[in-house]
Amino acid sequence: MKRFLSILAAACLLASCQLISSVLHDGDVVARAGKEKLYQREVEAVIPGGVSAEDSTRLAAQYIQSWIQERLFVQVAGKELSKSERDVSRELEDYRRSLLKFRYEQAYVNQRLDTAITQAQYQSYYDAHQDRFTLETALVKARLMNISPESPNFSVIRKKMSSSKEEDLVEADSLAYTSAMRYTDFGNAWIPAPTLSREFGMDEAAFLSALKDGFIEREDPQGGVNIAYVYERMKAGQTAPLDYCRPRIKDIILSARKKALLSTLESDLMKQAKDRGEYEIY
Image 1: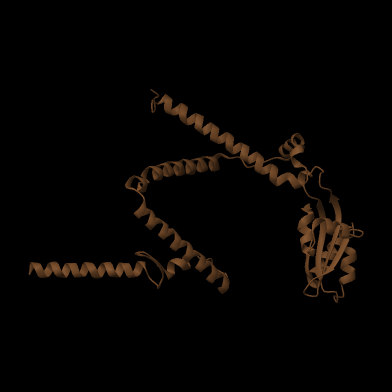
Image 2: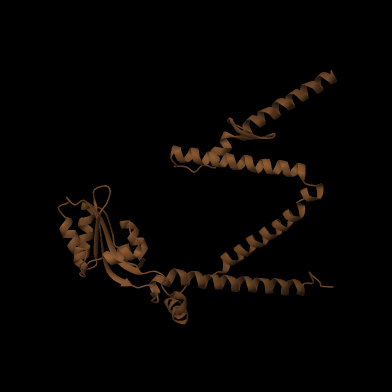
């Protein structure tokens, strides 16, 4: 009877393990490397939602190829390397410590970082470091429209988008909303000339040379017309305006603040630990 119960218990345990295995590895096997198997559900988990069937297939193939290569490398390394070479415990411990340090630093900075930057602080940094903001490419302020040449509002919008009057610009925007495939003034911000020239399939130099009274007009492959009106320009080699430099200045100032916080953290940590007698140097 005891033997029977032992056999029954073992059978139940085996069945339970098989059930757990089937749940954990639900789906078809799509690849194998040695004794390791890759399952369909694991591949599906790394494919972003909303991609086309073609992109999904390509991404899946790339992942499977990468998975196989990684497993094969690990397997051959396990055979060819010595016992000491296979021992990565020290590296893993170093990585664990580094990761914990990094995560604590991030939490410390996130809790204390002042992200507010005043206009005076932007201006002060800009004035003191203008040599860092020399333009490598031309900048433009422009309005861009894509419209059918058959549109009854074509000429009206084209004329008004070059106006300096606010009411004309508002009307151009309003008419373009219903008449044009696209209309933007880029938020009245400075943009690199190549950003606009690419809309016309041209390089920067050709684009700027093609401007006539601020306008450039080209047909697109779909039968529409791309029209841009450039109302302000800055040449490469000039000092970029403050508004254009603002995102870069923000990154620089916040980076300096983060560095200062981490420096304070390090010195405070060492001082407090020394006061508490938590470390000694022999």
